[in-house]
Amino acid sequence: MGIALITGASSGIGREFAKQLKENYHINEFWFVARRRDRMEALAAELSVSARIISADLCKDEGVMAVREALESEKPEISVLINAAGFGRFGAHDQISAEDTARMIDLNCKALVLITHMALPYMVKGGHIIEMGSGSCFTPLPNFNVYAASKSFVLHYTKALYYEVKKYGVSATAFCPGWVHTEFLAAAGNDKNVNRPKKTKPLLNVQTVVKGCLSAAMKGKKMFVTNWFTKMQHVLFKILPDGILSRMWLGMQQNTETKKDG
Image 1 (cartoon, rainbow, N blue to C red):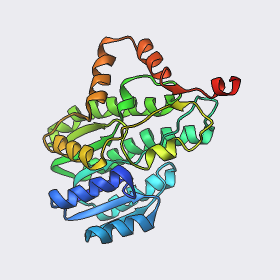
Image 2: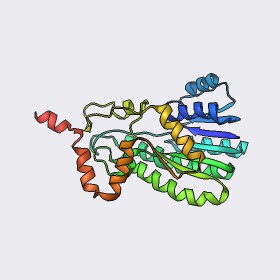
Image 3: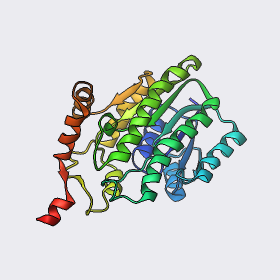
Image 4: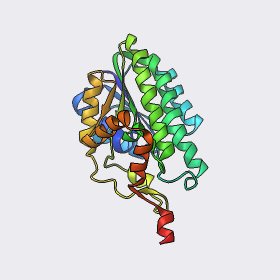
């Protein structure tokens, strides 16, 4: 296979995608995109792979432009595009800063779409696109509303893209995991004084979910949903009013206002 371009490659799910592609799919070269250059360089050294390192904050226009300029300069033959970069925050609308709200939209939606759009002309026939969704994409989630909405956008975007790129021999897969054991949860819930889930365990194994997603993507699947709980959530969303599901989610919340009153 040719080149794998992975955003969010410095940690978590993006890093695991790189490891499994190296082990099982014979990628010739990697393009790693993330903010932390040192981590990407360490990953390339660990895997002993040829890697183009692009240190960029994809929440910013100049970060996205850095990827565009590299693509236009190198004109790579991309076999796999994985948009694994993502950002989330727990909390109600008045508990999350305007800056963090914008970052969720800019990274989870805007950057994902733009990088897909700019990479598509360089994708080879038989190539695969994996877009980072979430189990939260199926249901409106109070106190996680912007993140869940951004992932709902990713799901619908990828499902439509699937049909658009099929004629070029390229597949598009929405990756919709539940809670995975990565740095994401610690970053999303680093403020204990916001409304948030009381429990996010047991956590899914990152190696297992990435392996399942790669298998689904290589088979040309439109969507990959991980564990039984997330699959059940997907089914329930189809048959139950979203108000019921949102209230169920609220019932699992740690409410800071209630704590203060008590």
